[in-house]
Amino acid sequence: MMEEKRSTLLLGKYIWQYRYTACMFAAYMGIAAAVFSLYELEVEAVWYTGGLCGILTAVVLAVHYRNYRNGYLKRQVMFKNIRILNEPFPTAGTLAEADYQQMVAVLRQICEADLTQWRNERQEQMDYYTTWVHQIKTPIAVMRMILQDEDTKEHRELLAELFRIEQYVEMVLGYLRLGSTSSDFVFKAYRLDEIIRQAIHKYASQFVRKRIRLVYEPTEVTVLTDEKWLLFMIEQVLSNAVKYTREGAVHITVTKEKVLQIADTGIGIAPEDLPRIFEKGFTGYNGRADKKSTGLGLYLCRMAAKRLSHRIWAESEVSRGTVISIDLHTDPQELVE
Image 1 (tube, rainbow, N blue to C red):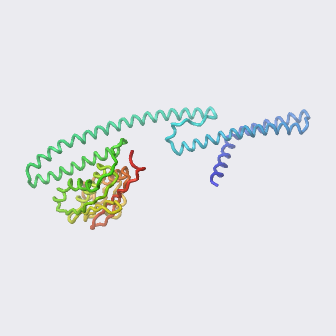
Image 2 (tube, helix red, strand yellow):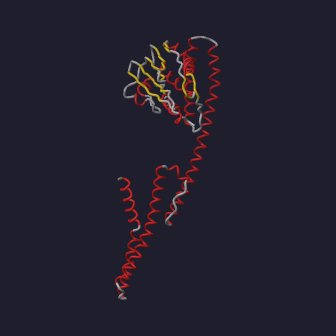
Image 3 (tube, one colour):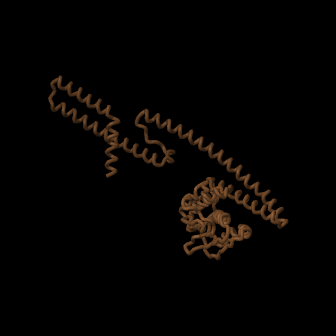
């Protein structure tokens, strides 16, 4: 039904576009009929001539309309997927159409040149910031070694602040890499327990400093993922758990369905904020109260999960705690190339 309606509309557009040509043809036929009548030719001769002209015109119009329709359908396909504009346009039927195609071709070249320049400039910026992030790690490591020489309360507080600086540096590096078009992913089967233990080891001092219990049962689950980026996601979630948990415990569990769950007994997330916590730059009520939230941690987790073909979601209740779940099932067809 829709196809018939579309064909009828297209035929109507065709007739309307060539209405002047049709009027001129009708006028010529009228003039021919008038001339024949002046010479008192027989009516059969007039009808015979008109019939032959009509048949010939119908054949020409049918061929022309077929080409018109094919060109229209090809343009519609190109409009639906603008990326295939690299393919040649349908053959121009008029000089004006040829001029328009030439103008589009020139505009396409200009756009490609601008896009190439933008990509080069963006890559230069990425290279600069990536180099800066790597270079800043050296003085951070030196300061950590100096502070670890003496175990005092002041040094422990400075180490905690230095740890936060390291987190922000890692977050910047993750943001740069996830936003890059180049592939930074290596997929293979990993033992999930080893990845989780790396994250626990990194945040062990923070759990001790805040006197928060960590409950984790080892797992034998093997997952198809990228170790570095899954570790990045777990670290970001643990960071939030430590930050917003004043007392109680953080539980790390892995279900039979390969869903990693990190649950805390922290302050929880307001119901109106929960749907937006994975948005870029969103801090919510807790972030505004803490005044130290960047609104990037969970956003980067969602980006990484998407690139890994994992799923991440949150459940929370104010004053009761938050549960972040990561579905570690992987669809090979959706993996980053």
